[in-house]
Length: 343
Image (cartoon, rainbow, N blue to C red; front, side):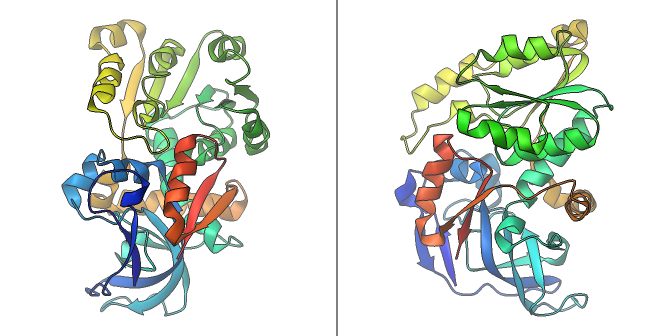
């Protein structure tokens, strides 16, 4: 099998295509021949050596990747509800950048009806993130005003679609004019292009009393202002810190990281109580230990996809060997939708 292997933290040159022996197939597992694997910003953080769960569960060397689509190549003992050749998608705890993966049965799902392998590989990680942020944490009622940063990206695009489906009034924030129509097509009632208009005055025009929920993966660049624009009883949901991290292959600078860390707001419990606001943060690594919740989230997403509520994102694909180009594109902030790799 072929896999992308990172032996130590660094830039794109640390993403090496290597031949590896096939992994053993334990009982209750499947071997999936991978036709497409999704690329997420978390994979870039793994490459930088800054992803805590990667250090905890794997260490070095590591193959990144949280999601794949492909066909069942081999069934482990006790797996009798699928057949070799079935088209599936799978959620992986790392290891997805490969020509084949071995995963537990509970992490393998059918594909959405009518979706290609690339589209199917693009949805699990961002879909689960959006589902958890919106439905497990934010709980917006119908008619609530919500603001989604990075609304034309992977997670943001799903958040916009699901919030619209729930009856929310959705503001989508994008960082370039080429992303405006994508966010609008996904269902945003108002799109703010922060590269051409002031973000927060425009956000205040749409929701003078503030937002029931704001979804922010930017970190230090917007976090403080996002909190100020949450309405009483509202929620700021944090799921990333992109603006703290090196961009487009820059070397890690511990001094720069420390500076951004010190500038990141700390939320005082007394102020939260007085303001009647909540700040909620999460990552999805824990879901692998809570299989029922993982399965419930995926089944909801697949049902919405079958119904047309959740549409496939725009997808740009790269050969597996050109993963460095994919990471560079993602870190540039210019991409729309999702990137996938083709082994």
